[in-house]
Image (cartoon, rainbow, N blue to C red; front, top):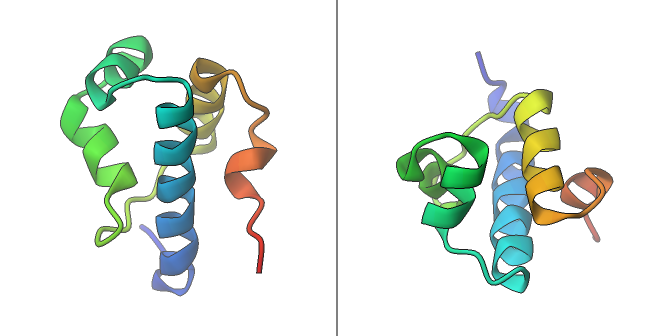
Length: 78
């Protein structure tokens, strides 16, 4: 169960995933294939109007696929 208190943080993580995915010139389909998940799952994570909780395992897999340290997905500039 996701805590609504962290809604904005989930959205920020999704936007960072989209940013780094595009820097890597990957489509959502390509990232989904690398991760072994559905394209709709990636779309939900990245959508700025949806807050989708992901596990740490998923976060680490995404960071590895994007060839970045996981902390880059969790560090928010204010």
